[in-house]
Length: 175
Image 1 (cartoon, one colour):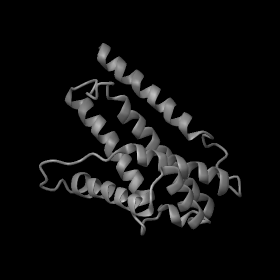
Image 2 (spheres, rainbow, N blue to C red):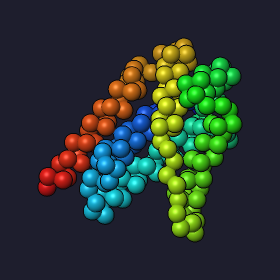
Image 3 (cartoon, rainbow, N blue to C red):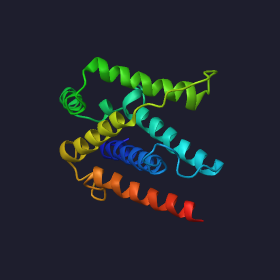
Image 4 (spheres, rainbow, N blue to C red):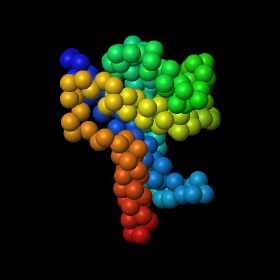
């Protein structure tokens, strides 16, 4: 795979994560209850969460994976230092977060182990790490015009998807 294709795929995964996280969050009211509780919407909302975790783990949780961030970044040491600074985390704390995300992926999404209870990961850390990675790609790795059609502002991309999701949920409630 060419460098251009590889970086574009990493960026695409970042955007997939952000879109699915926005749709997941759109389904929850301010009182932290699902807006629509029919089985279709419960399943759809859960699937949005699961895709977030899967896409994030492709980028940050699987060092042997094709799209692991370090395989696309030309300055992995600088990127990681900036990421940890952005997240206000130590390397060990971020490693613990990666383990949480992978545990949810492995124990709940991939295998549905016998655990009676599962902990949904806090997505704000994953969102911030994705926003950092996406911005880094566009600002520091785009030495060949690799992202001409990519949204320039990932936060605005997230907000647009969130508004779209809220409209869909609102329409579902009104019907």
